[in-house]
Image 1 (tube, one colour):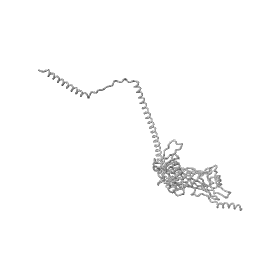
Image 2 (cartoon, rainbow over the protein chains, first blue to last red):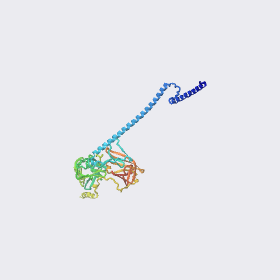
Image 3 (cartoon, rainbow over the protein chains, first blue to last red):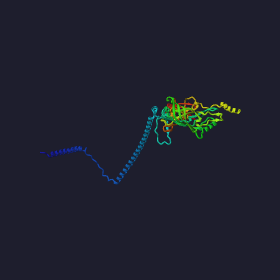
Image 4 (cartoon, each protein chain N blue to C red):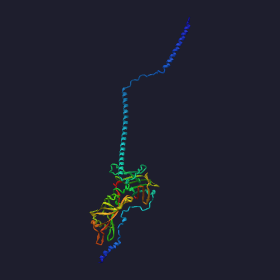
Amino acid sequence: MVRPQMVRRLLEVAGLLALVGLATVAGVGLFVVSGRVRVVVQPDAEPAPDPVALLRDDLRAQHRDLEALTQQLGDGFQRLLAALQSEREAQGENAARLERLEAAVRALARAEPAAVPPPAPQAPASPGPSVQAVPPAASTTAPPAAPTRPFLGFQLPSRRFRFDGEQEFAILPDLSRVGFDAKSTLHDFTGATSKVAGAFTANLADPAGGWRGAVTCRVASLITGVDGRDSTMRDDLDAAHHPEIRFEIAAFTPAAHGIDAAAMTVRGEIRGTMTIRGVSRELRMPVAVSVDDSRRLFVEGHVPLQLGDYDVPVPNQLGVVKMDPEVNVWIALRARVRGGADGR
Amino acid sequence: MAARVRLVAAPLVLAGCYASSVVAPQDRAVAEELPAAAWRPATSGDLDGLFTSARIAGDAALSLRFCAYVFAADGRYTGAALVDADDGPAFQTLSGRWALAEDGLRLDGAPPARCEAAADWLRLTTGDGSLLLRRERR
């Protein structure tokens, strides 16, 4: 027989066990679920934004973006323009440099092998004297530059004197003189002048020569050292109507072994036409040609000349003081190679 | 008769007194003015002033017609030259600093040139030629 106290006791134990079991299950369940459950506390819902304000903000933002974009585009175009200009200048310089190089190559190709100068040293880029070429006022385009070499700070075209090859020589009046020696019963005298001009072309090394050109002097500038005699001489030479004495060079005939290229000397005979007092006659004058250390041509020669051949009156004072009708005409000319290395 | 004799005799007497003025063949050429003094190595004092070219020798003479330098005592210099370029004559100008050393005159970085002096003259010599300069008093 089960007693009621015992039953109650059992029920209490069972109830206690049930509570413990529920608590255990609840704890296990909480442990399992706690990693997967997140509790979010949401605020209360905001009021709906003003659409006009939103649109205004959008417009402002777009305006700012547009301004920034415009600025960036402007900067970009500026840089592009500068780059294009720089490139164009560089192309221009390259083209000019190319032209100069082509001109130099052509000049070298024209030159004969013996006349080709050694490679010119590069001009000292830095440090060095600042050299400025002053261009002629009328020059509008940069001419092709020939090879140059420095000389005491200046940049000179690289040239060497050519004994061979046709070149043009210009007479240097200040360093030239022509004249004549005359004899008279009173005393012998010389008339001379430095008012000499002219130019001639010659190939010094070529026996055929190809010499041609002209030399002139002013009659009024001839002086003998005696004023009265000078006046008479100008009258006799009719300086008023024939102010110049002119010699046209037509040819040159070298003497036997007259061309010495090593010594740069030439001996021979110049042939041409002498015009005095308006009368022209052929004249042959033996000459000696040399080159001085300034690379100038020195031409000297002399030849007898009959005054009567040119209708020049022979001075005669009362039949007592008489002048010899033959005078000795002489030249002492210095001439300089004209122009550039190719004889221009 | 006596007058005629005097007339004939007079030129003969005058001829004896009136020396010939014929220029000797060696004197026909125009003489260039060149210093006769002996050359010596230049000192800095010789360079101070204005100099113009009197003669140019060597291959440089084929292109260089004329030049002038001004050397200042403080080491500065300036120069000008008339150069026969391929397209015609043209002036060149330059400026910089000069120095006189044992190996000669140095114009900035240019190769040295032997520098000699004689009274109012300077002679500068390089491998391409020599330049004779005359001091200008102006």
